[in-house]
Image (cartoon, rainbow, N blue to C red; front, side, top):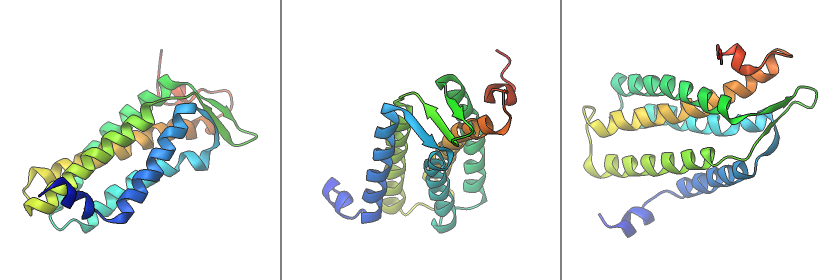
Length: 175
């Protein structure tokens, strides 16, 4: 299948999602202050995208779901570590989080999109069965990504939970 056929055969919603996610990643480069609810958008998008894949992919089975769960747990740990090392300021009164500029979200978004796009093309063109490594790999990648963004959000959310206690202390960081 040619690159032109792949690109023209891609649903419009995929390009709209890419544009939205890239805009969020570009905003993260500058840093800034945002309400906690806005910081929940990307984790919700990636988690929803992964769960929708598990539901709608005909070849997905319990192995795929298990790969997604394992990936999400691994990603959660990575996301927590990234958020703890990134620095943040919580304003409980305003309900906002101030984050320094970072390329991490944009890089994660682009890597995830590229891998999910490639895996989607492979799944669509190879007519992979339930035992296909593409199906399991797609579940794993999706889970890791959802977990990373959820882990970052968890640290932000925990920053609101207890006044005077850093989120890293609530997550067991002893450094």
